[in-house]
Amino acid sequence: MADRFPLISGNWKMNNNHFEAIQSVQKLSYALTKDDYEVVEVSVHPPFTDVRSVQTVIEADKIDIRLGAQNCHWETKGAFTGEVSPAMLAKLNVVYVIVGHSERRELFGETDEDVNKKVLAVLGQEMTPIMCCGETSTEREAGAAESKVERQVKEGLAGVTKAAVAELVIAYEPIWAIGTGATATAQDAQNMCAHIRSVVSDNFGADAGAGVRIQYGGSVKPTNAAELMSQADIDGALVGGASLDPEDFSRIVNWRLEA
Image (cartoon, rainbow, N blue to C red; front, top):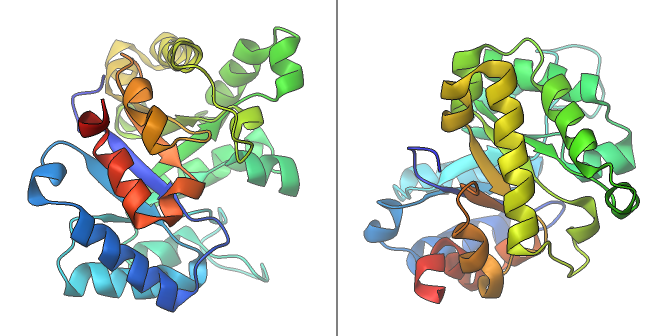
């Protein structure tokens, strides 16, 4: 595991208006304690319409939760109707930006090249990308899971310095386990996360391999978080549906108590 705290991230996807977002963050803060923040880092990733509201409540109430975003464009500004730039997010004190989520790749056609541009753009604004990778059930059954993930990692991180790689986050999310209720076994998740760390080490050096934090994402729940988080190469979780319930999400943050 990386020397830094594990990172538990809540990806709200297209859920919660800004009133609901404020309530959710407040309820989450009530469910967590100072002791929790001393052993784990927590981020929430609301829709763009909620980011300013969540920033305001986090800063006003001095909540020790990191503000995240779900996506961004790679350009700083321009004629890109409907897009949001990394520079805009940085001005809102966003810390983490999810890049290349499988839904962005599968539903909106994002390529490894697109993901790489976004990784570089997020780093350029002094934020940290959470770069996602993962395989479909078809690719897994065909024995192509490791090669698919290796390609995504190498191409997604092209041009990133070794030092920067050591500081960023990679999220392994098997596509077949997202929103389906299916979950990779803890051993399956560990095997792929170890493979990702090996790919990073081989391409960016041992320090980068040791430093990069690798999350698992794919139907993470309070009931399986402890087993997943106990694996040697899993440094956190990218949580979807369960992050919409502050109580469930707090239990995932407190996976040690669920063990």
